[in-house]
Amino acid sequence: MRKKNFILILVLLAIISGVVLKIGEILGFLNEIWWLYTICVVFFTLFTLLMYYLSSVAANSTNKNLFIQIVMLGVLIKMIFTATLIFVYRELVKPYDNWFLLYIAIVYFLYTIFEVRFMSNIGKGVSSFHDDE
Image (cartoon, rainbow, N blue to C red; front, side, top):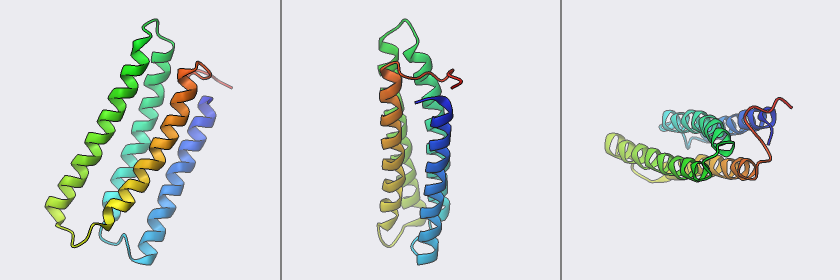
């Protein structure tokens, strides 16, 4: 996936996430957790951008294990961030139900699917962060 396509799709994904947030607010599901959802969207967007850059550099590296190490570290960081955010939210807010988990899961899986798609292309050498096309 070329850099321009990557950024365009990432922006569209952030917009879709924002629309889901707005729909949730209109329906009354996200009134109390809009800030939690926003933190997730901002983190995953910035983190995905960072992962794209790092994995592109790693794919062009002479160290063939570096790409796999970057991917594994990225998955670990994303999982730890999400689990920590859920734990902190539950401890601070003490929600009366667990619906907030659904919205966090939606964002997590949308960005994970996107990451898998672009990392698969990078890993095959199809794309590079430095492509101008």
